[in-house]
Amino acid sequence: MLATRLCRCGYLDDPALACGRAPKCALDYQSKISGPLYDRMDLHVDVPAVSASDLTLPSPAETSADVAARVFRAREVQHRRYSALGAPEAVRVNARADGKILEAVVRLDTSGRILMERATDRMRLSARGYHRVLRVARTLADLEGASDVTSSHIAEALTYRRMSPHMAMTAAG
Image (cartoon, rainbow, N blue to C red):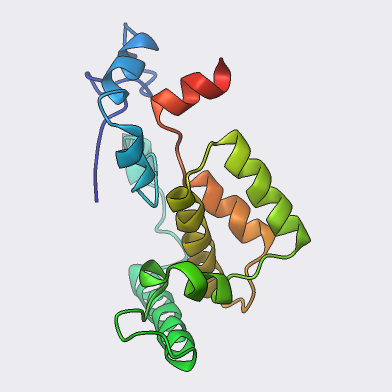
C-alpha cells in the first residue's frame, strides 16, 4: 500500500488552499515515481479531505460490518473457485492468480475484449497492468456476487488505474 499526495504542498485538489504552482508542481512531484512502480499499484483512489459539513452527515447505509461480510463471502468464493480449478495452494484469491489461471476465471465477452483492447492502447497498459485490471475486475464481480466478469466490471477496474505522469504526457502529446 502506498499513500502519496498529488503535489509537494498537498493542496492541488483543495479549492480553499489551491496549489499556486499547479499543474507543473504536480507533474514535477509525481514524475519522481517511475512508470514501472505505478504499474505495480492495483488501485489508485483519491481521498479528498473531509469537511466539517461532511462530518455531520448521517452514516452510510452500508456499515463496516456489512462490507466485511461481503468481502469475506467474496474471498470464500475465490477460494472455492481456485480449489476447484486445481490451482496451486498459493493461489486461493484473485490477487495471486496469474497467466492461464487468470484467463480461466476471467473470460471476456466481445464488449469486454473491445474495451480492454482500447484501454490497453489508450492507457498504454503493460502486460502487468492488463492483468492487474483483470484481477480487479474479477474481484469486483465477486464482491457483487456475479459469476461472470462483464464490461461494467472492466470499466470500473479501469477507473482505479492511473496513468503515471510520464504516460499521461506521452498520451496527450
